Amino acid sequence: MVGRSEAKTTAVAAELGVDYFVADFADLSQVRALADKIRSEYPRIDVLANNAGGMSRATQLTADGYEKTYQVNYLAPFLLTTQLLTVLLDSRATVINTTSSSQKMLPRVTITTLENTAHHRPSIAYVLTKLAIVLFTKELHRRYHGSGLSAVTFHPGYVNSNFGDASGSRVLTFMKHHVPISARFTATPEQGAEQLVWLASSRPGVDWTSGEYYSRHKIAKANRAAYDPRLAGELWESTMAKLA
Image (cartoon, rainbow, N blue to C red):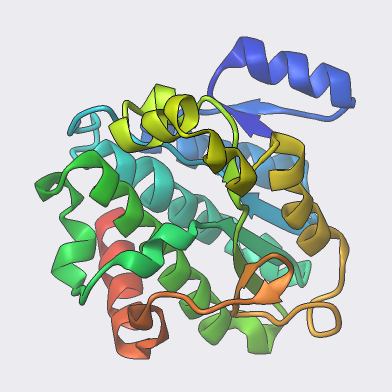
């Protein structure tokens, strides 16, 4: 497992009895170092679950020069996955990317929109990164499923955690503290993780379909832009160029 906070990551790893690594996805040099460590210690990877995510209170740039939400939610997971690609292909692995159903609400988007999250308020930047994750998943499937790699993305539900408070999102925080009916639409962290566990422990091509977006264990409808192969390919090539 990988976490940003050494204290929290160590505690959870000890409870689970698993190996752990510490890396801050707001620093791409740490992501590259993480990939190097994983490659050196694990000759086989069965499942890579990209579950990192966040929403900044205000527009922030990382030391790498990217808007923070864009880097943490999309660019860093993309980098980690591609840095591990040889091992993933050799292992015929599954890559699971966490997204959000909020990506469906976006109107028409372009490559410029997806890559310029700093021009939007934090909540919209977050949603754009979640659409980018869906496009990344579909392009990863298109390029490498024929070589044995499976890729899937899913919406975990609206998890009742401190995400709204930590993000500074007034909408999310208001829903949590002032709209009791929202509890009907929120899941516990354990319930939110259940779908990830299902995808990781079941069989691609039998229990679920690679290249698809899932919600509640079923293929769901994503944003219309997610089905544009030209946009997915363009985003992939542009991202690779940034990380070269």
